[in-house]
Image 1: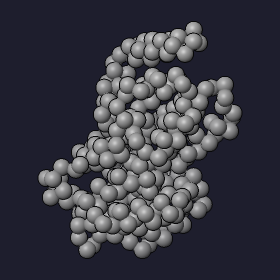
Image 2: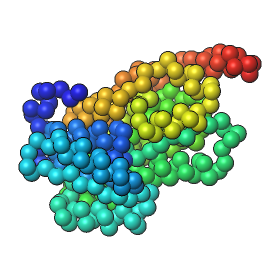
Image 3: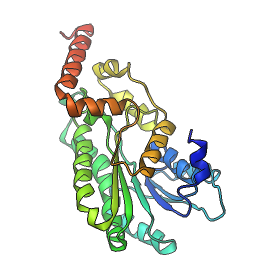
Image 4: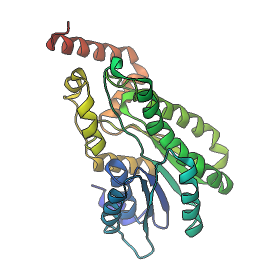
Length: 283
């Protein structure tokens, strides 16, 4: 739950936010927060029915008559389709103040089960799905010399586990992109943030669990599963403080450990994998 004092301040009053991947999960929870805090949102996703349901939920949280909630049905990996739709939105309203990229999904499996196309799909969905809206919006932000772009990576970047050989490289690519943009966009007064969510109870996470290797399921069962609302609250608070790195919950500890004691993380994950494989009769 957002803090009552934050809601009273209405820090997003008069602001416009684009939320890609905003029809479900963390993206939808974030869009709800923005509206509760006085802002207007446009959510982007492929599924029209999910978008319509999300718009109704988000609209019910409006705090003033100036706010609007709109939707764009589009695959964010298709630049030729998304570009004119965002241009139309900007012409109707104005250049938004924020772009939040929540597009992404994981389909974990054993490395020997993956085909090349599986890696390509993960790069498309998790990297290009966030890169393309950014490339479209950047000329507007750079011209105005203001704006804010946020990306979503994953705690897997700091706590790497078996099964994510196709997913993790895409999330590392997001991290690499964000690191460069953080520096390069400074002269344009464009802020950049990156979120590292831990396991979160979303529709995508449900699908993810269906393909996880048995080892991964067992190794991660001790970890807390967060609600989309918990992650969205931490994300919005981080954005308002203009934090570059936003690691909610257990991600904060993993981030610190990996930065300062990477060998310890490796020792823990290697030890746990050995124990689990023995338990499964694979050792």
